[in-house]
Image 1 (cartoon, rainbow over the protein chains, first blue to last red):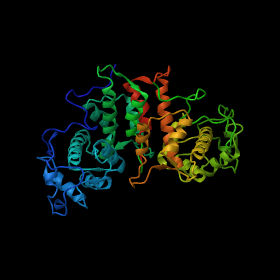
Image 2: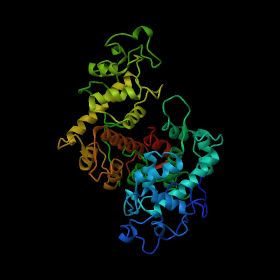
Image 3: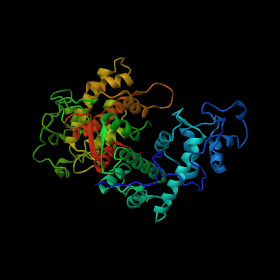
Image 4: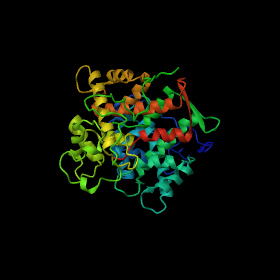
Length: 235
Length: 235
């Protein structure tokens, strides 16, 4: 029997809850970039401008805060940000983000034309997605400790439709055990990482279990290709 | 069609090639610990002794170098070593080992009674296994660069019976890309990590594909529980 269920309204999005149509970050799914939008670089005349230079590159309706956050870290005004710049952008809003989570985010939201940098469209999607994770984190961090413990994580994932068996939850949390003997608690970035891994793997599983039987069949190639992106990354 | 094949002589061992019956490190598989062997601590009179104090705790026939390596890092002479001590032991023999690989090794070779430390039996098995990986590394590092590139990795894994499709190899190696623009090359510790991940996941897959059809069926719980141990770990 399946021990997971997805929200029926959820399509497969990059390992994160779907973004609400309106919300703090105001990014609208499916918005098309301006007609002159290109991933291959900004026209020269748009570079070297002051604040707001990126505005026309973001989807219409993007919250100005998102654009400002992008501009703050895009030091060379290339219209793209790399992993270090993304870390800087997210660390200001959500404490210091660990680079491993940044790389997972970069992978999941990657620009189809450039896997090492993200452009305005990907940044807006990523930002909105993190806003959604933040809301979940705050809702389930019931004791307002700024950290999520195992029961809070279980409930948060459950609310998203992922009913993890205790054995799976235990293995997942053991990866965050700092060997101090204290109970495992997750900061926001680790919570996002956990959530995206669970969501990513579960959605991959569900793609092969369309009738919700709780079992899925994979070829070896498919199995390896879907699992490896969630594994280790260079550091 | 299956794109992998296992050595028929290989049973599932902790994600590493089987240890040769005789070799540099001389540890014999299946050797039983001395009758007084216990994981719950050494008798007081055995503690605080000089070099060789661990000898009777290792499987008979263990190479004295292995015992010495253990004693060198077991500073408190508890008869167990933790991840930092293991890192120290392996770094002396094989340059500095990254802690992520150490944690994967600890997980795969873990003491059934204590997941945060390993005892002499696990250490000897781990050491022997690394000796085997070292021999493979040296054999396929054809240009003697001290690093394994993608083609050398492909050939090394192929020699172990893992014929990774190019797409899988590419995803695997992308995790080790340092974003410098240079081609990806693996040090010994990353090579061991890659090898153990490929071996570990492939063997798990094969357990569910006993007729070697190239497809395997998993329940959701099994899928998550088998994949998560290879994922991120605290750092």
